[in-house]
Image (cartoon, rainbow over all chains, first blue to last red; front, side, top):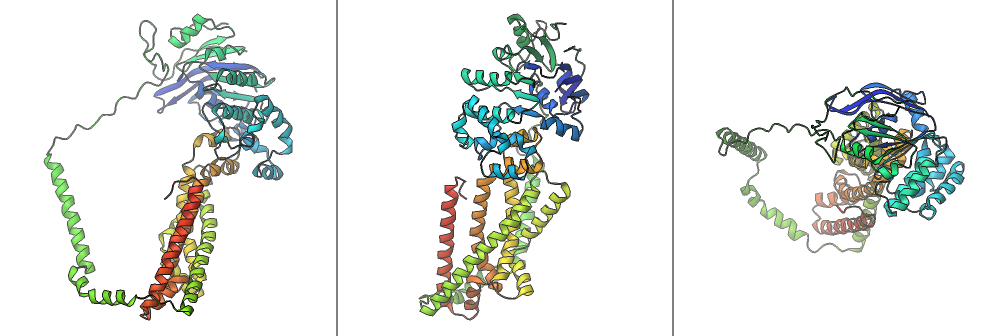
Length: 250
Length: 305
C-alpha cells in the first residue's frame, strides 16, 4: 500500500506538546522503510497514525489512497495491515496457535470460528501457519499457552500473527527490542522477506536500521534524515541532535 | 519516492542550546516535563479555621449517632432485661434433637438448600455474565445497550434478596422455586458489576493489537478480553455460590424453601432443640461449600477471597 503523509502534525495536551511536527513523507507500494530515532522521537506515534489509532491535528494522510479518518476506509486499511508492536501484546490464557491466528479474525466464517475455539487452525490458514511457524522455529510451542513461552518465542508468535493474514502493509514497532542477536536477526529477516508488501519498521537500533534499504530518521517529531546510506557521523547527529533538518538528500 | 522536510511549525520546541545539544540528551525528543502544579501553601499547624471545621464535623457526627440511638431505642438496660429470654433460648437449644425422622427431614432441607444455591447460581451467572459483557467499557457494546444493562444490574442488586423472595412468594407461592428466582436476580446484579470490573481491568495492549488489524468488537471481546479475565471470573462465580448458600438460609424465613424455611418454622413453634440441629446442619453446609469453593479457586490460581 502506498503511504503518503503531507504536513501531518499530532500533539498531546490539546496542541501544547507536539509529537509529530509537519511530517511529509512518501512511501511507495512494496517499499521497505525503517524509522530510526531516539526514544520519544515520534516513531510509535507515526505508526499509530497510519492505523488511525492517533488522529492528526493537521495535514493529510492517505494509505493506499484511503483516508484513516473515515471509519469505513479505516476498517479496510486495518484489515490489510499486519502489526508487530514493542513489548508484549499477546493474549495470556490462549495458546500460541490461537494468538498467531488473531490477525485473521475479521475474515472468519462460522466454521473457522468453531475451529479456532476448539484450539485448531482453520484449513484456509493451516499451510501458511505451518510454514511460518517452521521458519520462526516455534512449531513445538504452538500448542502451549503464551504465558509459558520465553520473551523471544512470544515475539516470534507476534511476528507470525502479523504476517499470517498476508497483509499488504506490515508495521513493526521496535520488533527487536529485548531479543538476543540471533532472534533479532531472524525477526528482521522475516520483515525483509515480505516481498511486494509495504513494510515500515521503527527502531532505535542503528544496526537494525542499516539492514533496510531506506532509513527515515526522526528527531523531536521531525524528519531529519531520509536516505539509503547513513554514515556514522550522520547517525551520531541524529542521536545528539545537531542535524535536525540539515541533511536531506535530494 | 519523494521526500521533503518542512520547517516544523506546530507547537513549542524542545529548547536547544548553542552547541546544538538538546537539553534532553538521552530521552531526546521526550515531551518537555509539564510545569509543576502549583501547590497550595502548607497550612500552618494549629490553623484556627481547620480546627473549627474539625470540631464542627465531630459535633455533627455525635449528634447523628445520638439521634440514631434514641430513635431506635438502643440501650443497655433493655438488653439486660431481655437476658432471661436469651438464656431460655440458649438452654432450650441443648441437647440438639437427634431424632431419626427429624434428621431425615433436615437432610432433605440441606439438599434442597444446595439445589436452590446451584440453580440460582446457574441463572444468576447466565444473566450476570450477559449483563457484564454489555456493561464493560472495553467490549464496546452500543451506548444505549450498555446503559440499560447497567440500570438492570443496579436494580437487581440494590433490591435485597429478602424483598425479591417476598415478591416471588406472593407471585408463585411458597417453596424453593421462589428462593431460586430471588437469589438469581440478586446474584445476577452482583456478578454483573464485579465481572464487568474484571473485564475492564484486563491488559489493553492485546485488545488494541486486535482492533488495529480490523477485528470486530465481538471478536475482540471473545478472543482478547474474556480469556484474560477468565480465571478471575470463575473465582467470582464460585464465591457467589458461597453467598447463595447463605442467602438461601435467609430467604427461607419468608417461605422460599430450603433449610431457612425449616429454621423459621422451628423458631415460630419454639422447638429450640430442632432449631439447634438445623443450625448445626447449616453451619456444616456453609463450611463444606466454602472449603470446596476455596479449593477450586486456589487451583485456578486466583487470589483467595
